[in-house]
Length: 578
Image (cartoon, rainbow, N blue to C red):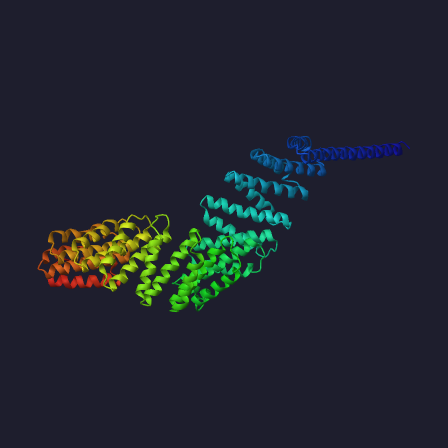
């Protein structure tokens, strides 16, 4: 009997306990929900500070309650509080609020809370990135990716994809481009089959980034592969951004097929049997796709495609078609003041002049060259225009020489070297060195020998300082030509000093073409001395040739120089050991 009473009492107590527990939990939930609604009500009335007060109270008072519903309400309050803090430009406290949410519920098994933590990490990473706090931003984003990277929730997938892309931006800022490229590849691999528009946009941006990286590294085959992949995957997308990316990739593809001259054996299948025709087809495909678009970068894509087609027709000797396209470029785009479009218009004028020159329509060509010279001006920061302008000076002077108008040609070449001699762009300076060489040769032709010596000297004084080997080659060649002119003018005291510059400036040059011209110049000097009964002086030069170029004897040109030097040595009857 007593046992039954005890059991009944225990059950009654347990029932009362359960009822009280659920009442307590219900009061907790009601209190938390009331505070949340109070916050939303104040927010609706525009009382942001009071709303933040409600959300702060809620998160402080209920943060450590174990009721899952209450925890969900706390998480919602913290997210909303962070939103308000961002709106009132208090980013630092917004970051701390999001961090608090993550710390509170990071280990929760509740799916809603896990999703809120993901959102908090994503927003925290974005805010830190906006603040340029790269290390904590990377930590937040990497945490999101590592914990939620394989989630099937579409909202989480979007955040993961964007977080991975933001990781690449941070890595690029740090100069870790290879690691960034690996993450771009991971984005593509993980999300390539996703149909969600936001995720597809991130994937498209990563594929674009990978293509641009390959182009910057002059890895034409991988760049072409990436462009082909982009075109294949995204050709049907309706997103305006992806449509512009598609146009850009069509341009990439056409330009690579058009302009890459040396194709490695293992990439020939990728480039196809006729890259030029494939380029033409791609230019046409691009022009058709963007025909009705005038906004954004579409105008640049169009003008570049028209010029690309013109230059292919030029190579195929379809000069009428090429000239028509050059005229279309100028007539349609000459008045547009965008730098990149102005560059293409300038190149179209140069292409037109070159075609007219090829057709021996010299007067018309000179008119176009003069149009370039009058329309554009030197600016050391504007490489394309500078290149076109200098080409116009050099090429028009060559036509004038053909037409026996040497005085006008001399004037143009003199202007060219005067305008461009101080350029900091070495690729442009190579053309300056060509202008110096052409100027000196013309001055010799016109018997302006002192002027020619001065032109050679100006080039010689600058060329050996340059990194671009083709400039140093012209510098070495200028030394030889100046020395030969001094011999012709019988200015003996200057000849040795000039020839000595070959070894002073270039004896340790590592470029093989430069070494070839130096070896040939030194042999020519030794042979000339021998022929003028100065064999004892030639012996010293022969010794230097053997010393400097023995290591290069596998090179055919230098091998020939060494063999001829041996024969000269025999003729001298010298006992020098080879």
